[in-house]
Image (cartoon, rainbow, N blue to C red):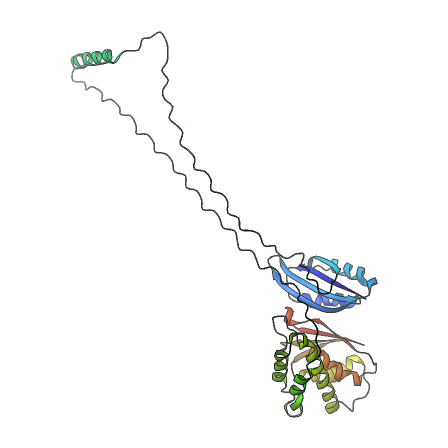
Length: 332
């Protein structure tokens, strides 16, 4: 058996985990864990699956033909490693463009005196000629007015260039959170005994005690404790309500025993060999799945009634990782 890590990029998250989970199951793999993360590029899906090495190429081909996946990577899973998602947005440093230099006004060019054979009149000559003209011009022109000399236009002011304010770079999106592998611990027997001590009088109103169990035990013992609590409760329910049932095939056993047992605690629907659990109170949005309890409960309540002695239950998806429902797949 090999463990593979699937990383995929998609545009929409609705039903994505369920549909990709079907590809995983159909190609002989079982789902170990999964995660959905919102990213500016789209929906980042990460799955860790386990199966036969000969089926790797078939799984890769199925993912490559799935139209909802924009791109994906399939690589061996490294236990305890933290591999960043290949399509996660990268944080870019803030960039502020440099201010443009203020243009310098052009220097006025001094007039250049033209050289030639014509003599340049002196200031004294210009004064004498001007006085003579002032005496003669009124007599020759009569009542005609002496034209007023045209004053030169004032020089145009220098243009002021208003530089645009530099744009601030948009804040970088938060990086996708990698997997954090917890160290598995043994079930907390004392906490389980306390939860199930009043099972005879409180069933099926047992969910508040299960929530207390999930919050009170250590993080590494959370799923093992929930699974063992589910197994003990499943055996108790079978002996109380279904001990007289004969041998059944898997789908019949799910319909007649499994679904009614789950329905006493949560809202559930059957889809062939799968059960869809809606709004599970044990599965919070922060990645804390409580599907281990429901898997243990189904395992204990169904195995005594099955003609086959082997029952396999694995989670296809969980609402704590962004799925619409918690889906458990059962096979014998």
